[in-house]
Length: 355
Ligand SMILES: NC(=O)c1ccc[n+]([C@@H]2O[C@H](COP(=O)([O-])OP(=O)(O)OC[C@H]3O[C@@H](n4cnc5c(N)ncnc54)[C@H](O)[C@@H]3O)[C@@H](O)[C@H]2O)c1
Image (cartoon, rainbow, N blue to C red; front, side):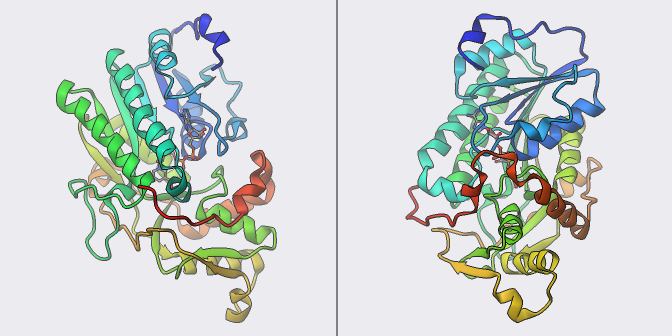
């Protein structure tokens, strides 16, 4: 939101059953959540607060942008004055807080910016939401707060041991959110999800990056050995997980949102080469990969148990083969949804960690 429009009331609350603030709604996951909320809950007003950073695209929201129960506000979660005023004028009942700096590689070179947005920005939001007496505040965190583990599966009571500046900032923000629950019984719920993939994701992250590189006849750049494994969840499954937590998640609780589906980065590259370059030949596949320097720290795996959210009735449904084909198709048509997106395909300069 520009400073000029702050003089005007943001809107008159009207007669919606609930007024839901979604932060970071022009980004990957939250845009899917917003589309689903706007379409399936016409009696809810959905307000999207996003500063439109390099990874955001309003094209992610084109299908719902003219709906009566949707409103976009361009603004920064770190702007305490704007955020306070937004809670007052919009009469927010529920918050889904997604906005963050999210790219691990970038966090090694811009660590303080990650701390500012992810920790300070979350504190600003929690404080305003507490003053406004919201009925639910969902803080979207990550499995990366657990750090790496080769065999032990993390559950919600496992200690936080982050190993990169992104994960550290998400873990620190969780502490602020939890302290409002401890002190005020502020109705916060924390989610920690595995890696998500699907349409709308800026192609700096591994799956859309490899897809886009191959679609532009370039090699997949693999960090280090590529033997690190990751668990991948399809976007629509994660949307359902958030809707489940919205309806049934208990204040003060943490919910892992995970999947048993796991593959190494090398396996991932090979699958994408098979699907996009239509080859099964090992030697041809090797021509489409390039091994580059590893990140300063790179967790081998972070296996997670998700029984707690299964108890609320959620389980992932979309098989990998189906999700990945839909994702590949989407990038064929929509790679140019972001400005200067070609930059995202360049190899990332690996530097010393500045934790
Ligand atoms: N992508 C994943 O696999 C994954 C996994 C686990 C958790 N998460 C968490 O989910 C959330 C969303 O992740 P994503 O990958 O969809 O993110 P994204 O990078 O695609 O989008 C982030 C959005 O936040 C906005 N934003 C950034 N700083 C802001 C600020 N100061 N004020 C207002 N808006 C701001 C950006 O403009 C962008 O639209 C993040 O909190 C992330 O930590 C993501």
